[in-house]
Image (cartoon, rainbow, N blue to C red):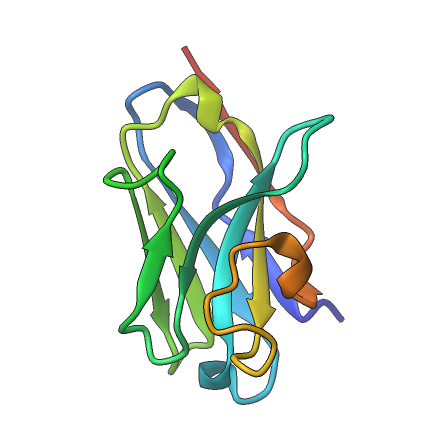
Length: 126
């Protein structure tokens, strides 16, 4: 059974919006810093956003800042990524990931996250 399962990807026109979800079966979900990453073929997994366990601290990459919002619902063990004003360069597989503050307090590198989902494809047509 996968510990993290993403959903919500799909095909959208440039300028459109998508909301990705990631359902977690990790115990004590609020202990985990949750992150979203994306990857295109031939490139390294890229940080998109992260959110603290309580949800009060967020961080974004410069490439998505102002267009993307990360949030979480600890009662439902789910983290979300609301993406607006999508561009063709946002096309990628989007991954949800989890880590603990014991590993890193501001994790932005994929190697800092031990738990990963299987990914969901986002395709933005221009």
